[in-house]
Structure formats: structure tokens, C-alpha cells
Length: 254
Image (cartoon, rainbow, N blue to C red):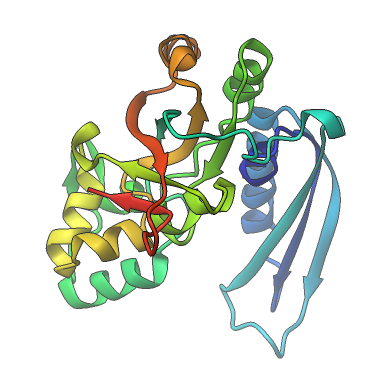
């Protein structure tokens, strides 16, 4: 739903696919309950799905989960980044954790570091911090879109800030992100330290605490921040749009 939201679409419905070797009813019920909670947060309907048992494909206790959402937006209201110009402001909304991305590296770090996953980590178990559900931004951002002109949005998934923000930018502009504009959350500090991960790799693999980027005109920035904060979001002004120099990357973290 966050992926279709960035084009200004309101999620309408969601369908899921659950595949396993042998169905564990309790596990499946827990999964469906979680999906239903996500749909409630997104304001969309869970209208169906498929459950497939394939004994020769999946070992006991393992399952594959997928799904898709459908949304709608009037054609003239599609947000595609075409109005973004130098001087616009880049806002970052806080993530709730790794947001289902970068887990190949997370698993590698865990394999090497061998931490106690049940240990206290800033008031919760480490494993709960690692597996925190993805934050759903639908309701606060749809409200923002109705309040002021939003020029572009980017859901920070696999590829991090450096590979997701360019999706909404024209070739003649670049986003300059100020890394000191927000504090790197403890989970990402831990991953970077335990995995000895370089800054550039962190920005390419993880969201680093920014789950969604919103681009607005400079004169609308303060109003957008106040609106999102009133909706319960943690938000920072993390950068600006500049004219792109020849050979310059479309998103630069400095």
C-alpha cells in the first residue's frame, strides 16, 4: 500500500497468497490476522486470497507469503514528480525498523555476530526490534495530499535512500540529503557496528530510519511538517532539491 500511495493512490483492496508444505492452522490464522490489521491501518479491504499446500516444495515449518494491493487515483491527480524543481524541500518520515528490506544482510550479520536475540534492546527484545512490522503511511499522507500540493513521494524500500528517491526525480535535478538531519535509530547503529557496514552501503541497503520521503515546495514545508506531526508522524526536513550537475548522482547523502 505504501508503494501505490506514492503516486497519490488510495488503496482499495488487498489479496494474499500463502504457500506451505503442510498447513499449520494456527500459523495461518496468525498471518491472516496480521494482514487484516495492516489492511485496517491502510483503510482497504482484504477481499480474498489463496492458500496452497505443496508438500514437496516446502519443509515443515516454512511458508511463502505474498500479496498485492489495488488502489485508485484520478489521472489528473497522479503524483509523478514532474513538478519538482530546484529549491523544493525533502521531508523524511520515520520508519518503524528495517521495513522488510535488507534482511539478507541482516541475516548475515546475525550469523556472524551470534547475538542473544532475546536480550533487552532499548526496552524490547532484539528480535522484536529486527522484525518490527513496516509502518503504513496511508492515512496521514492521503490527508496531507488533500491539504497542500505534494510534488513527489518515495517509499524507501530495497535500495535505501540512494536508489529509491531518484524514482521520482527528473534527470535535471538531484536530491541532497543531510545525514545529520535525523538520528540514526539504535537498530541501524547496531547493524552497522556489528556488521562493520560502510555508510554508503547502509544508505543503499537500509532505510536508516527514514521510511518515506515527501517532496514539497519550500513555502509548504513547515505546514506539511506540522500536519504530519499532528497525525502522529515523526518527520524531519532532511534535504533539498538542487540542479543536477553533469555526472552527479540523483540522490546524494552528505
